[in-house]
Length: 67
Image 1 (cartoon, rainbow, N blue to C red):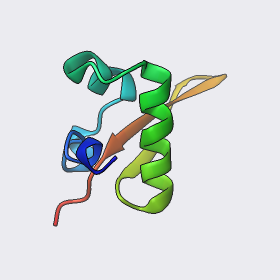
Image 2 (spheres, one colour; image 1 turned 90 degrees about the vertical axis):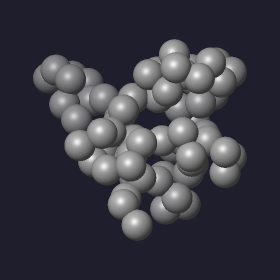
Image 3 (cartoon, rainbow, N blue to C red; image 1 turned 30 degrees about the horizontal axis):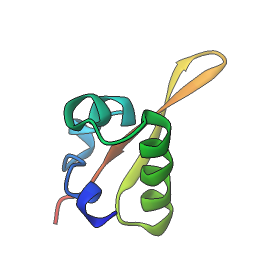
Image 4 (cartoon, rainbow, N blue to C red; image 1 turned 120 degrees about the vertical axis):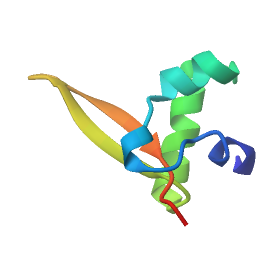
């Protein structure tokens, strides 16, 4: 999963969805990539930001903190 970390953009202003990462790099199924990104976020390897999509759903955006 360390290779996936390198695919996540640096900086909150560059945060992207799991689906966009999947579309660019074609890594397995979108749902499995999302699960891996959530695990990495829980471990603190990347950041996850929830953004309201509408009144019933949120979108997860992923990014790495600048070093």
